[in-house]
Image 1 (tube, rainbow, N blue to C red):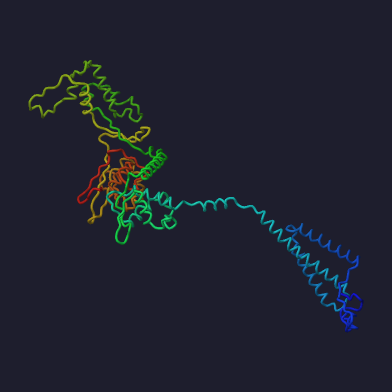
Image 2 (image 1 turned 180 degrees about the horizontal axis):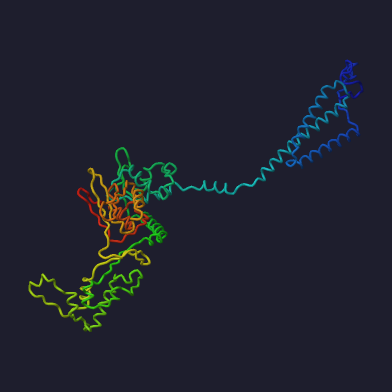
Length: 500
C-alpha cells in the first residue's frame, strides 16, 4: 500500500507514509497501487501456467504413482516461500504483492488438487458395480409370511388333529400340544404379538364367534377350555381337502420306491404223487413245465387255473362230462372220496356217481397240497416259493414292571430282513423314539427277535404293511416296508390292554 500523494514507505519517518498528516489540514486515505500492464500480464501468464499444470495433474490422477511425491514437494515450496517473506524486513510493496500472488497461486493449486482427488474418488466409487445377489438377498429377507395367515392355518390344522376323547381341552395344553406342531412349516415361528390379537385368548374368542369352536370360561380366565370343535365348518372342510391333496401328491412322488418293495402272497398248489399215479396224469402238466413264470417251470408249483386245467383234461380224455354234471369213475372216486381204512369198520359208505362241475372243482382243489410264493409287485417277480402256508410274522406285547411294556417281533427273516437286521432296528427306534435291540431266539433255526421298549403293536403293524390308516402315529409315514397283508399276528400277553 502507498500514499496517493507520494511519499516514502509505509513506516517512513513519523508521518506513517501520508504527507496529509504534516499540516493537519488534509487527510487522504491509503489506496491500493495499480499494477502496471506488464506486471498484470506476467501474473496472468503465471496463473495460466499453474492451471495447466493442475489440469495435467488431474489427467494423471489415479494412474501416476508419483502424485503424492509432487504434493509433498508443493507443500515444501509453500513453506519455503512463507519463510522467505517472514525474513524479508524491507522490500517494496510491489515485491510483496508478487509474493502474495505466488502464495495464493500455490494455495489455489493445492486446493484444486485436493478437490480433484475428492472428485476422482467419488467418480470411482460411483462406478463400482453392485452385486445383484445382494439385492436379491435383501428382497428375500423383506418377504416374510404374514403372522396372521400362519396362525389361522395352524389353528385350522390343529382342530382336525384333536380327538373327540380329549375334549374339553385346556387352552395351555391345546397351544403346546396341537397349535404349535400344526404349523405348515415348523421352522416358521408363531408370532402372536405381531398379529392384531396380541394374545391367544382374543383369537380364540373370535374363532368361537365364527362357529369353529366352543369355549368355556372360568372366573379367572375367559378362554380356559376348548370344549367342542365344529368339524362340519366350511373352512375346516376346505383345509381337510387341501391336506388330502397334498398327501396324495407326496404319495404319488414316492409311489415308485414304494411299489418296488411291495410284496404279495400267491397261493400255489402241488398235486400229490398218489393222485398222479391213480389218475395217470401228464407228468409235464403236473411239473408246470409250460408255466408263464420262468421261476416256476419244472417245480410242480401250480396256480389254481393250472390245477383246473389238469382236471378238465382228464375229464375230456375219459369222456366224463355230461350236460351239467361229471360222471365219477374209479380213479376220481379213489382220489377225491377215498375213505380211511379205520372208518371201514363203520357202516358202508355210498360214493356218489355224478357231481356238478363246481363241486368237483372244490373237492379237487381241497385235495391239493398247499404251497405259496412271495412275489414282488409290480412285475410279479417271485422272491421265494415253498410248500406249506405262508410264513407268519408275530408281534407280541408283554408287560414289564406294572405299566411298562416291551414289544417283540419275530418272523421277519422270511421276508428278507435277515440280511440287515440292525438297519430295521435303528429305523424303528428313530421313528418311534424308543429303545431297540436285536436278540437271537436260541432256536435251532436261524431266527432273530427284535425287541422294542413300549406298546407298539398297532404302529409296527402299520409300518410293516405300509398302511398309514392303521395308526395315527407320525412315525409310520413314508414306510419303505410292504409285507403281504394277512401275515402279521398280534398277541397281547397277560395284563396288556389293547390300544384304543
